[in-house]
Length: 411
Image 1 (cartoon, one colour):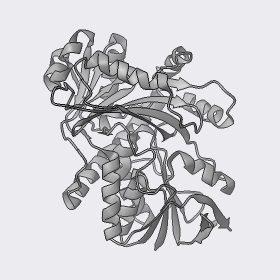
Image 2 (tube, rainbow, N blue to C red; image 1 turned 90 degrees about the horizontal axis):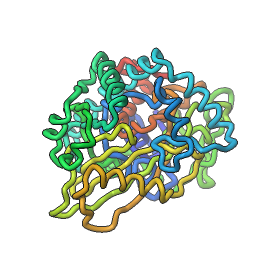
Image 3 (cartoon, one colour; image 1 turned 135 degrees about the horizontal axis):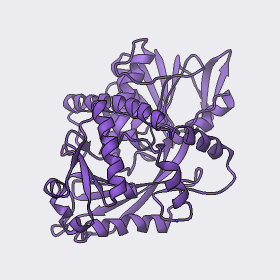
Image 4 (cartoon, rainbow, N blue to C red; image 1 turned 90 degrees about the vertical axis):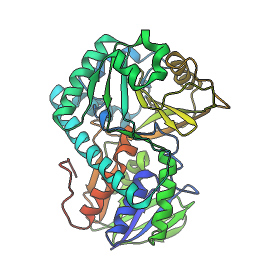
């Protein structure tokens, strides 16, 4: 079939790759001048099956309320009138029960495990180089109550196939010696040796090049204005004054997907969760981690990308605002200084923020929509990089009329 993919982030480009490999004729539209320049640009860099516990869990409501007035809070809901956020928040609260949390973990782990396997096969096939490391992910805790809750969450993940093991402070230091100065702060951790890290932006751009070599056509600098539909089918896409037509359409525009599809009567439970990152250049005397880490209490991750350290995280629900907040940027660096006091940046630290497309459950929306020839691949929240290859492969199966492999909740 002739297929039009809307969006050239990591999810859109992986969709294009697997669709082209399945034999389809693929065109990709994106408003940016190249691939991977929005949410995929400077994210946390983790391929983290171990990050499967959704934001919506039994502990979340009270934590969110406690953080409400903190400008540097790990999870911050801006108090303002926003009907979309109100609807999303009510759905979020419904997902906070223990039963729903466990069910959502099951689906997230299933897709993430499948995706990590697809990524490894793709890397072997294409020899992509993107500062990837296969040294696992270490979750650290500095609060005993949070650590106790994490031990229970890790047990649930192990039930579903994620090898996330609880470790002592001494084991944390053996896994990542750069944590030694912060040893008095730590109470324990979890380690998933099979997780990975890498630069999603470099991966996306290189894979886009491989796609183009396979015949995928990329149209950059083309903003999608609207979809036209008649009798339950999309007839075309108006973009930059031009009409693009195909047999099938894939909406992979991240947080902007619901805005595009709302005029067609589709109301997607996706809302932008603004995340921040700092990229620190490293020198010879920099003492920085080489194992990717997650500081669960502060919702911050650390990933070594060659001679850079990516510090990223937090979630701010503030609509489609993409302005950098100095307080939240400073919070990233303050926590980095607490954990790695000898980090010693070798140059200017670069700050960034992006909008992650979050569903209330953290389970993405993948598959055929209510419109016959329109498919969705969005709603991955903080796990877009983790789930990208699996999402693209599963979507290609669905579009091609084949049952997708992972035991996952598809549309």
